[in-house]
Image 1: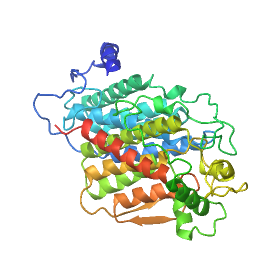
Image 2: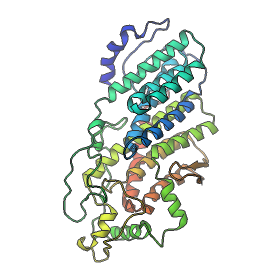
Image 3: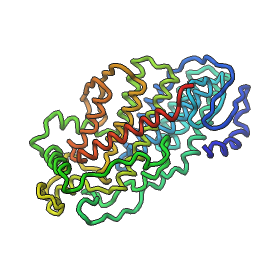
Length: 431
């Protein structure tokens, strides 16, 4: 918020040389002037599709792919900038960061300008493609003061969020990690020889007060019956050559390998289109959804490196050292897919599932049936009778993959729901 106040003076010179006047007040306030019935806009759904494609293309040229933490952060910045731009045109929700007033600005131009400006910074490898999409979007709009004002407005809200997030700690998320040697302590996940995103739990959240606000309960003790049950479950269901994992469970495991922020974003667009949400409601939904996703990963990584609990692959191979007579070691055990090089507890995938579900449940009431196609299991469509069913399936997928103990999943889902509900209750409220 302080960054925005400093930014106001920088943006003032030259950026408002328009027939349209923009006024900036305190952060998080509202405009109390006359209401302006702006025309609706389809730009939120269009730019959601552009953003998802940009992330997929950026991930394809990034060694190791783009992490879900980085993906959700990019979406959250882009969509909050667009949300603030739309609400400067017609105040329907409280702004997140930029409290501007710009009735008469073209909404399509504002959204295109805001999203493209943010994503070109967050995804520099996609700058050319984003410029092409932006030019195509502006070509469809009539020239004039409204279009020019929309472009300027979107740039302002984009620059404000970029400035506010410039020192959020995400650039320093990788850090040294020295594994402890005691049973239960996280060891580097084979075949990796490092721990990733050690400091992500300290990244500044979008809505939460801090990364430890919703820290999970601890993992089970190694001699607890709950640990024994979880150990034997993942050892059986998560093994690469498992004879107990069903074909459907194997499909679920690989279907949900895709990053959860993209999964929920595509589901959100589908449901918003079916329910005919207007552009303002859509943009608020996408921004709130991705803020919750981003914060869920911050919360998850705070818990991960606070507890530094071993992954199933380490636990199963080293079970002879855990002091539990009911666990049996298997030195050759390996998971269905290679697990990420981060601690087990709690599951970030599950936390993101819970956070997204909480936001979607807050918007889409009543029966919500939908289908989804995965980016990581081509040609497969799965059907769901509720958002909660998909949420639970995303969580269970990590057990079927051999990535997590069930307690890591259940605690992650609970943590995600807490994060998502907090975001719904504390930001972008209707006015």
